[in-house]
Length: 294
Image (cartoon, rainbow, N blue to C red; front, top):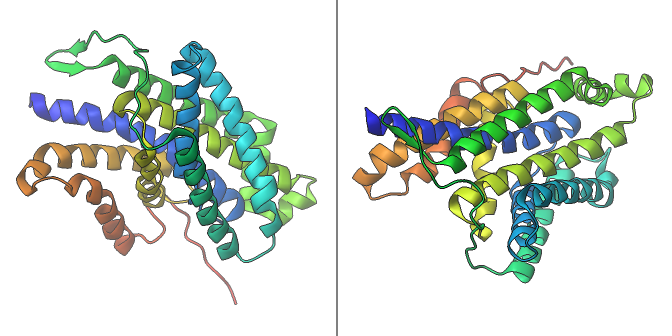
């Protein structure tokens, strides 16, 4: 039972980070109907920027994180304006292919600047373990969970109550109607990409503090894609629940099944779950079913 609870806690924490990063996929899909295959590279760039500020320039972690978020927002705005805006009105596959090319470019830049070696953040969180009964939680896991929950609450409030958030929801529902109401769809697209870059950086920084930082961290973007599709690509609620489901199942698989098969199953199980769910619910758990009339 103790081992089970330990794996459960780990799965919830990692799954919450997955949910935060998956929000980037959802926002971009809701605003433009495209899937951003450069989400993992946004995560990687933000993680390395924060690590460089902390480790090389001795900037306090909170200040470094704020600078990283500002940098990520600018990166998101720039990518949308320079790379993706020319594809507005073009077939969606064109925008998707552009994000695939963008992911390769960003990955190459990261390799040139930071190389391939694994780096670790200086000790930021307390190293004294937290005990909940017989379950031991390291502070970095506890703080990661708290930070993710705070971000999810903040973003939920932003989309529900802010004028810009309401405009983004209106654009996601019907772009033509949003345009007729005076909403700048181009601005909505730019903000969606900026927020996607920001949440990716936050998730990357948290995962970097847990596991260290190297170029393989960008694969989280590919792993989080099943989270977004599982919950429903157009559902923020689905991204959160999908992240927790994938995180918990992945943790349990790593704890119980990997030792039996020699490892590796943990990395595959999110995609197995994705295929099984889509066989039953093609639009994901909470995705809206689209009906086309001819």
